[in-house]
Image 1 (cartoon, rainbow, N blue to C red):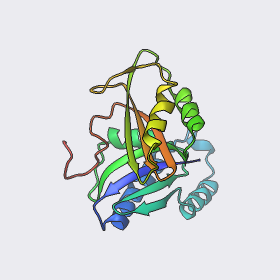
Image 2 (cartoon, rainbow, N blue to C red):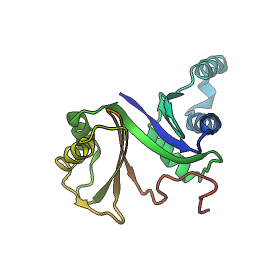
Image 3 (cartoon, rainbow, N blue to C red):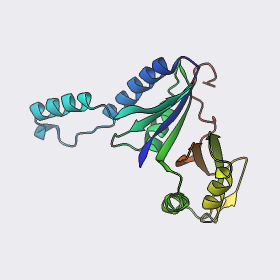
Image 4 (cartoon, rainbow, N blue to C red):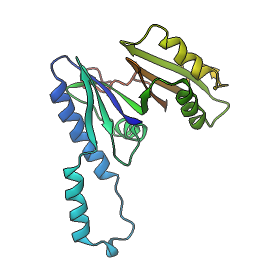
Length: 196
């Protein structure tokens, strides 16, 4: 299973959007590294680790289609964690419109969706909302996804101000899913549309 981000941008700006996104993600991941004891750091080892990490970029375009692409995430941080860091730092992009974190991306399987949902929900007295978007999917995918989620979640549905957002991106026979809290901006990261 993969994890990563659905990124939408203006048509024809995919390459510039990816470069912009890659630069920000690389800085975020690098800044998240902490050292507990500076006296015991072997500088030579740290430099070699850094060179190896630069050679192996943890963010790659997994697939691309007109004005959207999926960036796979092989870093130590989850897409949801990176997404929260982008929001906390109020980062906006020139070429990117929306960024949707995907904690798991897999071929559609009702049992995998149920398992993911069961492992993530902890606060039983909170509300939730499902945000579902699809592209080129079989006709009954939406119904199957909603059934898979609602069969295992016993929380109150709140369409206006939910605590949890269950984000589902369906593409052909694949499904990307994550659970986000506190997202008031509809995943907008565009400088043009930002409300700074």
